[in-house]
Picture 1 (cartoon, rainbow, N blue to C red):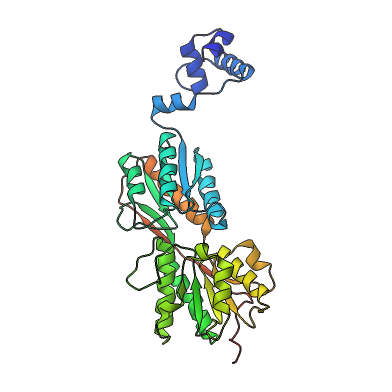
Picture 2 (cartoon, rainbow, N blue to C red; picture 1 turned 30 degrees about the horizontal axis):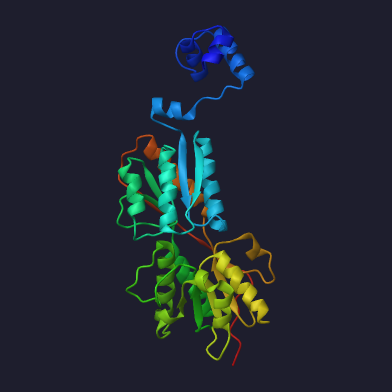
Length: 343
């Protein structure tokens, strides 16, 4: 700032007013200061500006898995809204790990972001999220909820989506239907369990409830978690071989579906003749494979966008009660479902 003022032949206070576009500065002086700033390659000190104004005009976003197309689209939705409102977006990846998430949140708070968007690694272990609240920063959750926290949340209607996908398979005549998710969980799933991701928890419950209503005995036995640990393709192969092989699979996301698709090909199983496959998320590949995969499309871009809108409202002083926004999903029927092959 001193160098700019010297080059422009004005005081440091006048240079600051011209560059900050505040106070009384003539057009001629402002032009001279701006020309000097450009000549010197001047860039404002963001930290100093934050210290003086109390605002950084940045939002933090912490996502679960940077390789998952869901988070890429949600982040784009948040970035579009943030940019339009004059905010920058700083991205961190938790890898669905609470310890990594804690470090990411610490880094974001140290950067003095004005607020945070978080897809929490856990919906039930929420100490990391309380850190944000204790720091006095607005927090908006997206994709997953944390029922114990009174904060704005943007989620999709996951239980209804799971019911619709499962009903589609039941209507085609399937009874041995597996649900696969990569979420970590100790032991087999039981009704009393609360999964660490509220979105997966809702999908599992919608799946189990729909099988039970159709008279399928012990529907919990068809829920298969920990796919990341075992390996999606290995788990799928195990479910698709033997006398008790499943005839249909509900994939909890598009990465799971891709692993199942590859496993079926490796076993020379044809979709949908030998295996019916449906999935959450309308990833690009699901519409261009042969056959195309039936999916429950989430409004992913809008989930991120709405979360950013809520966060910016809080930053700008909205003190109303917390909002939970539940966005509808859309079934896209393709060619991956058929009646099970007669035994």
